[in-house]
Image (cartoon, rainbow, N blue to C red):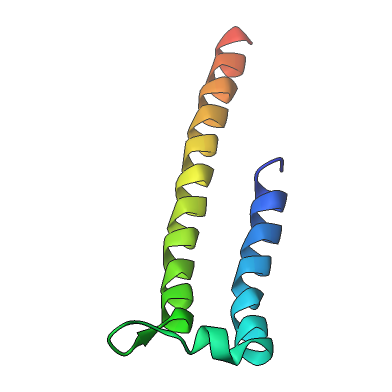
Length: 76
Protein backbone atom coordinates (compact mmCIF):
# COMPACT_ATOMS: atom_id res chain seq x y z
CA UNK A 1 0.00 0.00 0.00
CA UNK A 2 2.99 2.32 0.51
CA UNK A 3 3.59 2.18 -3.23
CA UNK A 4 0.14 1.61 -4.67
CA UNK A 5 -1.65 4.62 -3.16
CA UNK A 6 1.01 7.26 -4.02
CA UNK A 7 1.49 5.74 -7.48
CA UNK A 8 -2.26 5.81 -8.12
CA UNK A 9 -2.55 9.42 -6.98
CA UNK A 10 0.42 10.40 -9.15
CA UNK A 11 -0.97 8.51 -12.15
CA UNK A 12 -4.40 10.12 -11.88
CA UNK A 13 -2.89 13.59 -11.45
CA UNK A 14 -0.61 13.10 -14.43
CA UNK A 15 -3.40 11.60 -16.54
CA UNK A 16 -5.87 14.42 -15.88
CA UNK A 17 -3.20 17.09 -16.28
CA UNK A 18 -3.33 16.74 -20.07
CA UNK A 19 -6.98 17.78 -20.57
CA UNK A 20 -6.61 20.50 -17.94
CA UNK A 21 -3.50 21.91 -19.61
CA UNK A 22 -5.07 21.73 -23.06
CA UNK A 23 -8.16 23.49 -21.75
CA UNK A 24 -6.49 26.26 -19.76
CA UNK A 25 -3.20 26.70 -21.64
CA UNK A 26 -3.90 25.83 -25.29
CA UNK A 27 -1.25 28.21 -26.63
CA UNK A 28 1.48 26.34 -24.74
CA UNK A 29 0.18 22.89 -25.65
CA UNK A 30 -0.10 23.85 -29.36
CA UNK A 31 3.55 24.91 -29.53
CA UNK A 32 5.38 22.88 -32.19
CA UNK A 33 8.39 20.93 -31.00
CA UNK A 34 9.45 18.77 -33.95
CA UNK A 35 7.67 19.21 -37.27
CA UNK A 36 3.93 18.82 -36.65
CA UNK A 37 4.45 17.28 -33.22
CA UNK A 38 3.36 19.65 -30.48
CA UNK A 39 3.72 19.70 -26.70
CA UNK A 40 0.31 18.05 -26.20
CA UNK A 41 1.32 15.05 -28.30
CA UNK A 42 4.58 14.67 -26.40
CA UNK A 43 2.76 14.92 -23.09
CA UNK A 44 0.26 12.26 -24.21
CA UNK A 45 3.07 9.95 -25.31
CA UNK A 46 4.91 10.53 -22.04
CA UNK A 47 1.91 8.99 -20.26
CA UNK A 48 2.85 5.63 -21.77
CA UNK A 49 6.40 5.94 -20.44
CA UNK A 50 5.07 7.00 -17.04
CA UNK A 51 2.77 3.97 -16.90
CA UNK A 52 5.67 1.63 -17.74
CA UNK A 53 7.85 3.24 -15.06
CA UNK A 54 5.11 2.81 -12.44
CA UNK A 55 4.67 -0.80 -13.57
CA UNK A 56 8.41 -1.46 -13.22
CA UNK A 57 8.42 0.03 -9.72
CA UNK A 58 5.45 -2.13 -8.77
CA UNK A 59 7.07 -5.31 -10.10
CA UNK A 60 10.30 -4.51 -8.27
CA UNK A 61 8.36 -3.91 -5.06
CA UNK A 62 6.31 -7.10 -5.53
CA UNK A 63 9.45 -9.20 -6.01
CA UNK A 64 10.95 -7.82 -2.80
CA UNK A 65 7.72 -8.55 -0.97
CA UNK A 66 7.66 -12.10 -2.35
CA UNK A 67 11.19 -12.70 -1.04
CA UNK A 68 10.19 -11.45 2.42
CA UNK A 69 7.08 -13.62 2.35
CA UNK A 70 9.06 -16.70 1.39
CA UNK A 71 11.54 -16.09 4.23
CA UNK A 72 8.65 -15.78 6.69
CA UNK A 73 7.13 -19.03 5.40
CA UNK A 74 10.49 -20.79 5.66
CA UNK A 75 10.80 -19.68 9.29
CA UNK A 76 7.40 -21.13 10.13
